[in-house]
Length: 218
Image 1 (cartoon, rainbow, N blue to C red):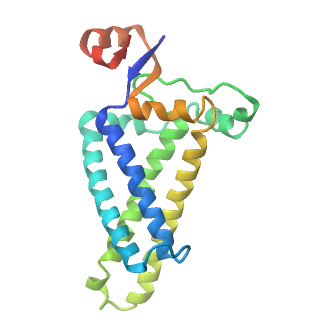
Image 2 (image 1 turned 120 degrees about the vertical axis):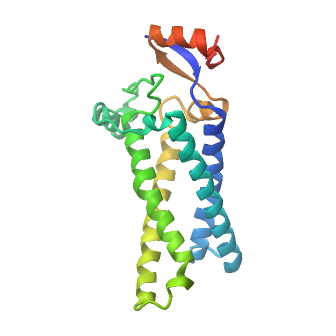
Image 3 (image 1 turned 90 degrees about the vertical axis):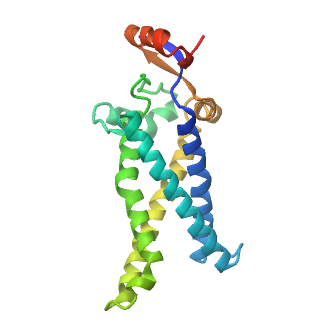
């Protein structure tokens, strides 16, 4: 295995990441305002911004999902049990003792087992939950005549809020983990430039040199 600087994050993936980040922060800010945590913007404006940001993010996620499956990148998010306990132990204990990260990135596996499991849960459980409840909430005028509609609306709202707090927790942990190990700048840089240091087998290195030389930084 050889360590090489490889372009592992294509342009669309970086665009998707930073657009998603900006829209999620808008949703968190306006969501806190709608729930009375702050009064920095008027309620009506918060509703409008929250709704528009949510719909734009939904559109981005639809395109991103299409891209993931057409490019085969979805395989990066399949969780693996192997190595997960070692990574969890590192974040809970080893990082505070200056230990080396137990996971080494490889060409077709840029996410460590804990990252892959987290992203898998977010994409297939938390995100569908928040989108489903949000769309049902927006469509309340259509099902308002149903019996116990107000009670059902409270359930939908609380499920939406629960999913939102799970995402807020993920964002906090995500930002925190960017500060451990090699440091914030080194963790963020690959998602800006697209290039990261990973391990390549001789076969992978030869394939990239021959067929996709633009991926390799010499």
